[in-house]
Image (cartoon, rainbow, N blue to C red):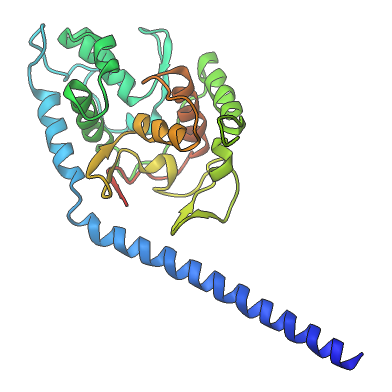
Length: 270
């Protein structure tokens, strides 16, 4: 009996050491990735997109030869500081909830004369869609360091939140995945990257509070619409349409959950 007891004690001790080693390795990896991002931040290429966005904001373009300087993003015509951290929100003139990217396209149509439908059918990173990403980077950067506080006073804003919550936990596709499969609980990771729990406030500059962001792996600037599009792809779900109610509802759900988190946009990702 003593030998069995000794072996059990040894096995438990080894298990404890292995678990401790695993936790230390995970912590060291996460710290290493954080330091890597910090080093890249000094020369974040997102600054180039921000500069381009500022030029596009002030430049007279489109069939109406007008600038975007009177675009109302929820804080009044032309006001960009603080607008990003309160989006998506309901807009009376369109009668729907819009995020930053879809609202910018509305302004491009009403102020400059571009056709919104044509822009939304354009692939990411091309033509006017590339300009939307640059504009979104410029506008979002003006709210860097501010805390998210999405409005939930209008009935459609509340409906979008509840719809987004249901979609977040809905399983589907060939792999029976949901958003919650990766982002529904604490202490999850994929490969070398921690996966934030987006059902609650994940903290400053994490999850919703980090996009638009520059992706080092493919040298592209991504807004939230493209980020969600890629999540759908990874879940093996059908590709969502740009500005669909599904993507907007998920953004509202994550944005409301991120209340009081500070924006670090433009962030940099691997």
